[in-house]
Image (cartoon, rainbow, N blue to C red; front, side):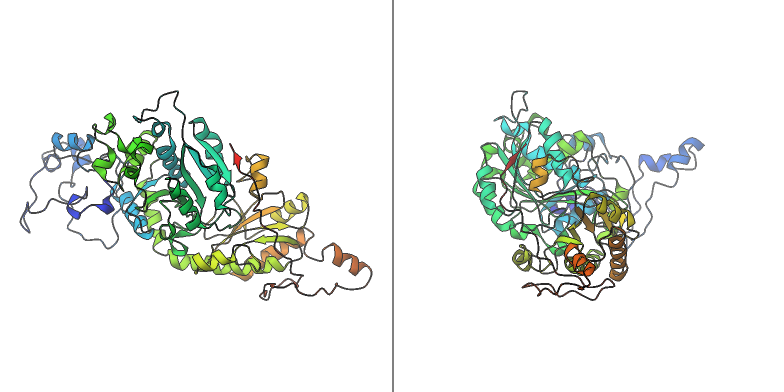
Length: 536
């Protein structure tokens, strides 16, 4: 297992892969090693075909950091191995808990989010699961951090307008682990405070909600969480650090599905947990025994003592939960994410501008009941968008078709450029039907609180030309029988009266020119803001 502190917080000489300093003059040949002897001309063929040529690393300085594809890492001595496995000295040991390539991704994402360290995982779901297990698992409810059978798990307060997979995780798998969840409206901080219990160990919200692009008041939620001594976890997947750094607004932990916009091409799964440096378990040691009391697993030393206030939680996540459960990130996937991140700002700008244009056109289309995106005229999140998201509010939006379920199916099945797939953040535009796909396992109460109906469609707007995307949507409206007039206009047309001439509504969006004929501008649906808390 990897037992090093996060490499981004260590001096260079302490980095697991850094060479020792002051031990060898410039230009001197390296001392012979076991590998050196194994790879000499005297070795037998079976040995040479494995070790030959590997003794001396090439004298190269690649501009692109090399990809480290190795399951295990060698030690120079038994003493070094002993100290590493006892977690007294940092080292890479086994790729399940880290590798140089994965560590580079962790440092880069910590820097992008303004954090003090990070742990990468196999997926965003894994990142969230490990974070919640570390904070709200049974060990944290026992004064000696012993997860005894009779000890209940902790409690999480979470946004009810959230990705369906996160709801599945909390309602099912983590409930089996003894963790309780209360679902609350992300727009009502008072509801979050009212849900707090003595066992509450985390608040969880998305910076941009999935699928409706809801914007919570993150500073208000952070203040509420901190008044009760619990960390605020923000899933920043839809925003990315280019649009928002939750740490600046008070978030304690930031998680990502790196699969999405950070990688940007839908080729690799990855996740990350970033500690922003705000969470201090030592401030209330009795609330966080898993971090503040001596544990046999960690040499009888409290994690906060050995790894500091801002390293203890990440070490617990890495050395216990990542190590034991094994949702590790492969170096190859980490490299794909690193390659994608290099163009993040350019890509996200394109995503946002195209999504805003499509949202405005959908908002004006007679076949659409409502469009949910903060850029749409009349959005209840417009003020938060201006304050917290000056660069844009992402490229995920939802809308309700003005038709029945068969019309929705005809619309979806007619799409040609938009891919029917359960992903976001890809170069390709995608459509999903949340009630049938990502949110299909929600209970009726949580589906209602989340604003999910049979008419709801989610778009993840990619990087194609906006006119091609709009043409695809336009022909899908036609296939669904929604391209022409709505009921009122159809009645007028049948009577030979033409389209009714209604005065434009106040604050109506100015709609860009589009291939489809202009329709009436519909007022945005009133936000679902008065829901009661739902406890699973």
